[in-house]
Image (cartoon, rainbow, N blue to C red; front, side, top):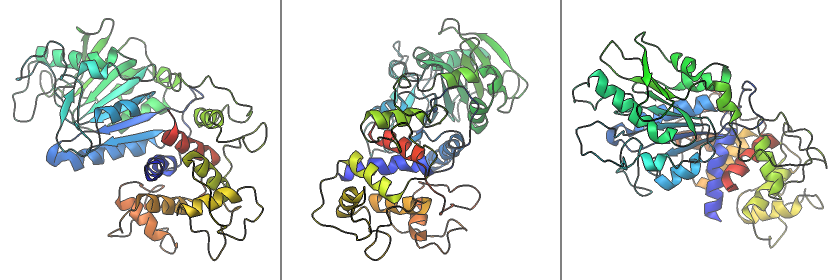
Length: 441
């Protein structure tokens, strides 16, 4: 059960990390974003920081954001996480072609990801074109490659800059494997941040080429037909003509940011429920899964109430069903006697996932707050104490220690500025999202 709780806890981080803003219309389904950071030796912490920057930008628009970071960024973990993703961001080692190394005619180790060969390892192994071509991405997905060697045409540090023709080959080659699958574009940013690109995909209705141009254009743009992907066009924008190849895009013609959003949830949005109030919810696909998995009957026979705050009693029932907790051996609280969720509350208490709200009470009708969710996560993950105070608005909160543990572990960045918003409620829609991520296929 501990492994199931751990998976649930990690998924919950994304569900309550920030309150997602409303993105422009494009699909009823929620966009899935995956951030991958591979091992890069002494630069790993810096790469993780850049990955977190992309993560928190994406959370402004969707709650379905997953991080797969070294030392647990294995190929199996990455492939599973990327299923159905509309945006994949990868930071790590790049191994492209042409390069000073041995030519691989099958590109088995070229033009893909540098990942951990096994969980817990700090070394890297290259998974090239045949691997990335097998990723089950959402239709029209965008792959963003950040801080890689070769991907944007560049060389490794300490190696001579390539000529323009070599840089062109590298760009076309690095995109080929991803474009052989569902990806519609591969965007490479050698040095800078990728947050502008993520923001553009969520908030604009423009071509992917124009979205790429939002990311700090150098004014040296040129384009050419890809030599590896039929019908695709490659764009490059070096720091100066013939030198500094750190920005590129390879895309199929006519694809727009709206097309990317319309591809979200294409494989799962066909499910039905009796709920009439979820058609415009950003959590629709998760609510469909929750219903079809038998984990909810809604707040009425025809409504799910996705924006309603979830109660402590409802949370106990959701979690005990999802975790398949065994029956309790005794009654733990006195204020839930005869209540709908009493059996599940006792299961949670026996599993040591809750201690109630004080005395011999559980407060089943009270709303779950972000602070309480932090406490649940800190207990489930057995996080160590924090070395400092991270937020200014939780200083008198009895759960402050748990909130700081979460922040020190890199599992939350608060709700903006130096705040955590400990008293803000968690909604039923958010609950559906983290249950789906933890227990869905």
